[in-house]
Amino acid sequence: MLLAQCISTLLVTGLGGLLAARSGAASALLGGLTCLIPSLYFAWRVGSVGGGRQAGRFVANVYRAEAGKFGLTVALFAVVFVAVPPSNPIFFFVAYVAVLFTHWLAPWLVRGGPAP
Image (cartoon, rainbow, N blue to C red; front, top):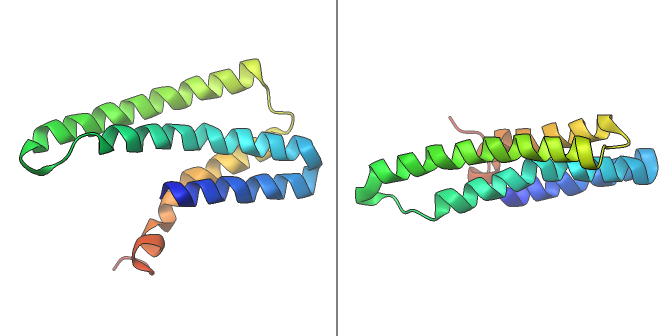
């Protein structure tokens, strides 16, 4: 899943570079990373606790990881728009949405086709 999100980020960055030169590529890269970094944090937090007999602890850790992911997303949006405003916001948001919706492709990526 994270690999698919990385590929999505690179594809939209390349598209931004082709259509709007350096400003489009930089904005798309910022948008992709704004979505990808919280996903990496979530995967790291959830992967640190195994399931099994500790199901309650695992569920609590998933909730904490999701809250952290949301907080990190808000913080990254704030940092991007205050410190390094994207010169081409359309590519920023296209990249963010493309990476965010990559999870919709998960059934095809995992099983090779849609889930029944």
